[in-house]
Length: 522
Image (cartoon, rainbow, N blue to C red):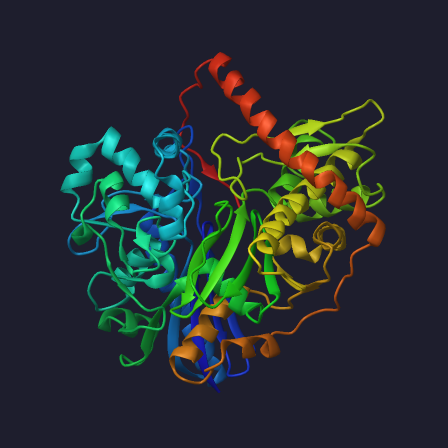
């Protein structure tokens, strides 16, 4: 069989998938690495581990294809958005990869918002002004270390890093990744002058932007190491979010994709770059004429994992009991929470353990439980946390409606989507049927389908919806949906009120102790 390999570089693992012409998975691998937290607000990755993981994933999947007698006809790349790292003139890293979760640029972000250009920047670049974005990260460098900023030959992200490691080509980045930097005008298709001035970089320090279907050449060394012919095209690919929509078949009008992993996101595809007046939605490219709008939330499955560590029997943070893994402990808590009625008996959770992004894009968001009474027990706290995440995604969906992009169907993917409780609460919070896509790695499969599109084998991307197997849809419960709809304004009012309280708490709190470098487990 002729297969395409998709390589997806994520925050904690690189996935490799080989897919056949109908999207069937022929081989699958995963290479893990730790996220480093060397100090308060920092979240970094070792670039060498990322490049080694990409090459290992490619070699492992290619070997599996050879064993099956499959012929690799193309390779396609996916990577996570909003990363930044300094690079030398040859594309070699000069420091760690600063990830989307790094929050050091919160003060620079607040200054950009206070000075006034934030909304017009988002309207032109499609990226909210938030500490996640390379724009604010570079503004941090401009203020904290201007000499390094000016003297660094190249600034790039994960895609530029992987392309430099795998391809025998110049300094390139795809349109999809560029559209998520906060530095690129998605309407005029050029690096944005005002954003560059705020960031303190020159266009020559950033990569040349090419279409997501652009074909590169594997370097001879990489081709030999992977056991692949040197003429196999390497499609530069796109960002993980847009590719996840493609990989679960959420590209036709009215269909949205929900990712429920450690974090979450809700996205739908439109046919042109779109900016919402309220500034609540991002807009990133899938191809030159297909764009993804939506919002990402920092907290999804992570809230249940936190509950398992903090609310389960034993000391906070205690490891699972012998013979019990973390997933089993999460499932046990969700089973308890399923016995609680919708609304968690009057308990409201703002699940912002890792801060929050959409729909407000305000740094400094913190979590809270509201309405806590003595009769509330652990199952109520867990269910309220899951409801809080789903309500956050519903706020993003409400922004779709406000922009004239109504959604009628949801396709869900991610580890949390395996839970009936998660899916049923999500369906009621969104008041829409939710179908779980039966694909092990939707983003990597999306990279494979984009390569088929680049090769001319999948001219209509909406056909991906017919290639992705799905389970039966879960319908919303009408009474629960009505309750969540009434509660949603309270979520927004409470979240913004807590933000003001947290700012005062931060002023009163002692300085954090110096952090020792530690790796955050998966």
